[in-house]
Length: 634
Image (cartoon, rainbow, N blue to C red; front, side):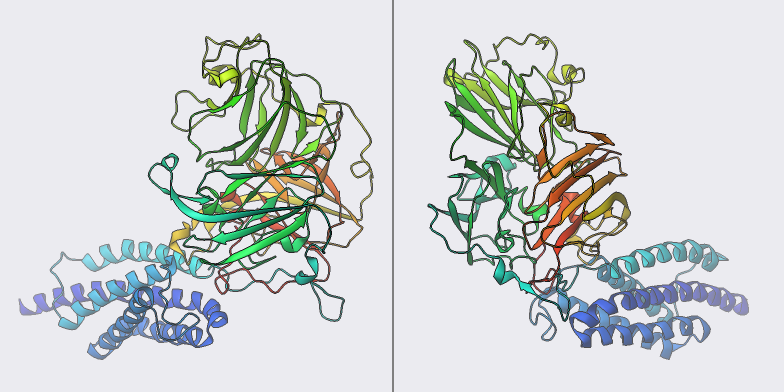
């Protein structure tokens, strides 16, 4: 009887040995996975992780092969020491390291490691006490197999997260030893005597009801920020004052400007810290509709409200009785904007798609009701010979702009709607703007091809979708019609499930990793160019998503869509909306030296890797992306 009890206890004890060993082995594996990153960041910590991992790797088999009090106590001491150091580093910060005295962010890899060590301590304590709980015969086998499988899966997740941390310090410069170098300091706007326009944008927190109780991040206390309106040829000087609790920057979306003024944190500048300020200065070369937004932690800062319109009026051009700008974004859940216009007024309506929460990148589907109109410009650039249109769907990807022109009818209202399906809404249409005398909200304009008895979402399914490649009148475009280019590059857009920046839980690491040619930023291969070269890019979308691909500092001349050349007006865009399984070709003249981002403007896609660079040879930058500097452009 006594022998039978002893034998049962031995089996029960054996059932605790394997989980304890697996947990110790899992912690060792994750410690090894994070060691290389820590070696780069702070060598002493990297060495410590390697030593701890080696000790745990040795202890894990000993727990099973040579079970005993000394082995159990040693494994417990290592786990307890790791937990103590981890707890201090996440609460009060360690006295040594890359950031002494500053608590570190909680990461997936370290959270799993700590969970493993807590559980191993529990099992080892029971083994050390020699009083495991009672269980049935073969408990150790029945319990160990599924537990081992779950722990193995958790270990693999932890190792993947550990080997894919936030970058520590990545320099995106293209300079090579022994060759001529142009520094970022050489790429500012040179002095001149242009008319000056000065603005101050104060980034600050404000409680605005449209954010559903959340505090908005604003420029000058409003969302969107104030419209900046200047003349072509003006010297624009904007001072950013940062009163936010985080660093930030301003990017001037769509403008051709000197690279050092582009506002991309970690590439053209350091993000402006809380309490700091920075002045951007450049000459606005091109008339049109543009906008500005944060390019530091863009995925989070733009949806909070850090964006606004920038309008560059031509020195000479057609005069409009009314010239309005409407910024579209999923956070502006406000009532329609009421805009005054009298019958007979010639109206220019500038629509800017600032951002969308749709993770698929589905474009806004704009519809103008109550009047015939013309699309006179795309992304700020005029179209040749635009013709009158009725009710059509205007797909606007994030970052894209439409300029519409029309004459107010003798009676009634003109209304701008977005009929893109809204998640969880029975009526998909969103009313953005109403134009008319007094801008009454009632829709009483004649709509000859629009059935007012049906919901807008229902009718939208039968509407024609605007095609920019066949609209307007053809005209010469020397860039699009070259035929041969100095640089040609195919960019294949793909995605796959994975962990990105898994060392920081606040960045929600488990998503679709997005890639150009199988690489995610900052590991994508830059497109190297020299000044004066003509560059052709072929954008091949192999996903089921939409990707508005935005090029900084340059303008695409569109060559073709799905292999079909343009038949209408030349189209010049800074953001090409590439639909699911579509292929677009665009070209540009490399006439603006610098380091320029080329990325998807669906913010979650860019944050999860869909970004690369167009880099002129021999450009050096003192700025770096990563946790060392705190610069994270996406």
